[in-house]
Length: 183
Image 1 (cartoon, rainbow, N blue to C red):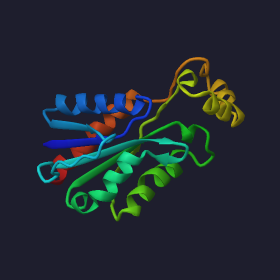
Image 2: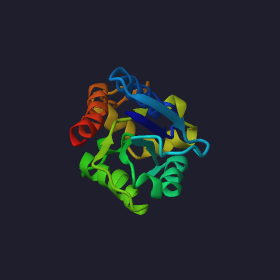
Image 3: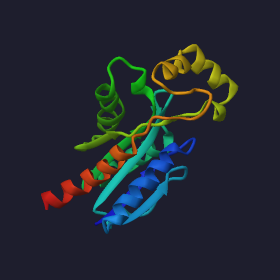
C-alpha cells in the first residue's frame, strides 16, 4: 500500500512520531512518503491508497500547515482513506480527558472541511520547558503545568515525554489492518 504522511511539527516531537509511524509501516512492506507541511504540498494525492495527517496542538490549535492541507485538499481527501493524529499534552490537564480531546482536535477539525475518518488518535507529546521562550514558560507555570507534571511523576526541569510508543506502533498497525480487512 502507498501511504502519504503529511504533518506539521513545531518542536520536533510530532516529527519523531512520524518517524516511528514510517518505520512501522515500512517494516510491514508499505511504501511511505512523508512531507513536512511547513511548505504546502502540491504533489498529487491520487497515487496514494491512504493519507495520514498529523499536527501538534499548540495553544489549543493545530498548526497552520496541516490545517491548510486539510482545507485545500479536502475534495481529494474525501476519495481516499484518511487517518488523523494529533500530538500534545492537553488531555493530561483537562477533566474531560482524551475522548473530548480527540473530538475537539480530530472529529471537529475534520468536520470543518467536510471530512471524516474512523482513525483519529491522540499520540501524546513532550513538554520541554528549556525549549520554550520565557513568556511561554511563565504562562505554563501560571497555568499550573509544572505542578501537574510533578504530581503525575514527571520532572518538569527536563523533557517530559507523554508519548506512549507502544500505542503509537499499535495505531500504525491498526490503520493498515483496517484497510487490509476492508478490501
